[in-house]
Image (cartoon, rainbow, N blue to C red; front, side, top):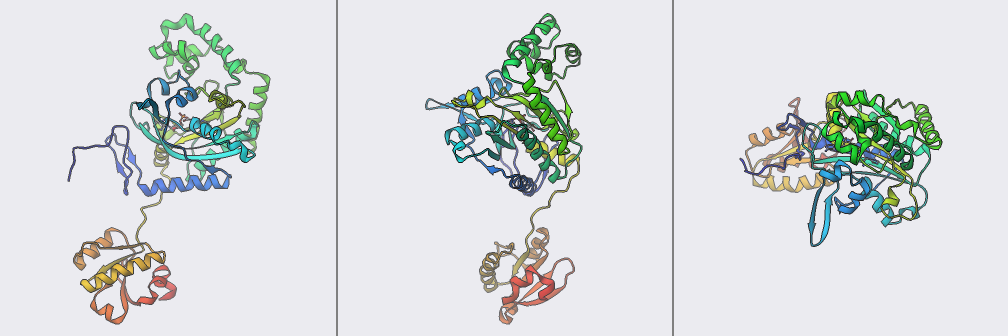
Length: 435
Ligand code: HAM
């Protein structure tokens, strides 16, 4: 079978079985996605986070203002369009949408700190490559209304707890502080002064950034630019005592929790809303797109989005596709496909009618039941039971109907047993005891 249609470049299908895509990347099976999502949900529950779901479509202006006009995301990666005078964007991230929702629905009035988590798709028109997609999936948290270093440390601890629950090790946490926007402006001016005489030596990207977003130059992977930056002024020298005290306390708390980190004064993030603490989590199995997750504090975002009151906040988001790459590299355990508890094979019209009814009854009793919808031969049905890895096949023909008992075959040993219809649910849920 075939079609001339293909999924859009930079997107992918999640199928019942894992497969390798055109770029040679393994795409995990839907059962693996469910397992990762269930693990995330369990860690969130244990850390007392509540779920929030916001639309995939948001007003373009929210992203432009929230993420920042000069960022790569807003400059060149938004899937944005106009329809009936409204500007829509497919959300490139979920922090600005969560803050919008928090403000719009006055979630502060619920009282206390709002600890929210999300899992969902995001869209960025980037050049697709291994670990970088145009539709990808994030899970993340946002802690809203908490200015204490404890919130920063807990945010990072939640991220580490998800990784641990999934069996990931070999992680590297990079940590930095950006201080307040006011002090950062002073630093940016100093950095521009230092780099301006060297503008000719800079790559085109960095030259553009020198004007629009000089901090991002610190992120450069170009070797001679990295060398040039070694003598550049450092951000930490501009950070206020108050910010430093906050940062020190975050580090102390991480130490308390046994979370290891590397301080990286050149860690700046690709979104404009960050203040104070920032961090990124890396895994060596990821190659060029090494960031598994990133986050930090964004104490001014609510005001940027129109709030009269400040909402100190901190959060992170992790890329699920990158998580799978890291899990593959780490050869971490993943669940196999969900297999039926029993396959019912029927012989003849009367038996088929009985099977159709009985399948529904067994399912109502909680069993995962497979059967044939095509009226095929017994041989074909048994082959299908094998393909689906059902541990038991139940064979029903005229004799079984007459006797009121099913022939139940244990597929691995080939042993067969007659089980009265009334005992089927009990037998199939705990065969050893009821046999
Ligand atoms: P971000 O660093 O832009 O931060 O994205 C977070 C994570 O999403 C990255 O570390 C990466 O794993 C994944 N990711 C980003 N772009 C792609 C892509 N094109 N393909 C595959 N994965 C990707 C944020 O989005 C912030 N909202 C994080 C945050 C939450 N900060 C505070 N709260």
